[in-house]
Image (cartoon, rainbow, N blue to C red; front, side):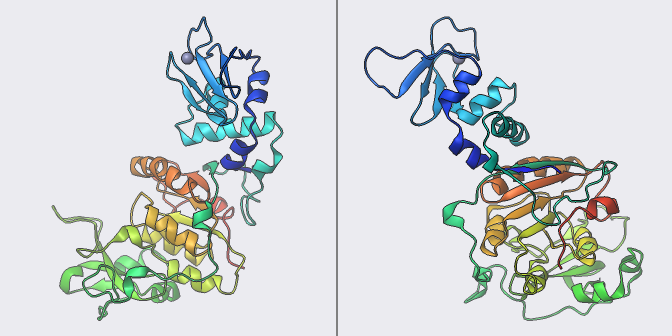
Length: 357
Ligand SMILES: [Zn+2]
């Protein structure tokens, strides 16, 4: 079983002198002046005099000649030939550090349901990255509602005062093969007038369950020129909303210990995972915003599994979203093969995801 690693714990427990000793690097103490700073022959450039300073109190290093610098974990990463600016490589370094210096407490088992059954033939490659939940963003037990809904006049994402009349049996929905009950639960249907005309409309709710918008997907795979496949209303602030969070919170009321959630890009992916009892939200695209992470933290989620689409956008979005997520929660990514999305990924990947009891 693979483990999660907590960057913060690694950093807190790494002792720079142990690190230097481990790599056989000699400390040069200054004759006078500061006693918390040593010099070393910089291992990152062809150094002949000790150019690199290591502050043993602040546990940071800085080379005046080659500009190498960072904390003790960055140093380990550099020594291991890994780039600490890349989350995936820093993660590898964190495992090396935890292992080498016996920082057991930084290694955690995944939450229940985690990857208990991850099979060898699984087509997904998983990587795990973690960072601490910051003190200031401690998850509260209280159910947080989206803020702008009260006194929401003129503000975006306020509750709608109308509902669209939709055809829930449109062929484009039917051919997706979802159960009628699920389509009804999500309220998805074809719209034949107004701004969503010709589209499959997906009702979007805030975390409190108020209907705040519709997003429309063009109801055919043949897209006329200059017509976007997906449409959101003008002024809708998608980066402050997570599609399906309202239903997840409702289901979580019966399963209060559940603190892991899956993030995907699209509506159909949410439908598939929701139908399999996996707590799952979508970001309306291939990136996660600060506000969206905050929404999850406020609602008590501590572990996030990010599964973006198996395409260029999904990969780029995963890279850019990881640092935002890892600042606040434990995060794991599942990389899908080209052309695969969470609504078409193998059942054995789904089997590794957390579920509602
Ligand atoms: Zn240097």
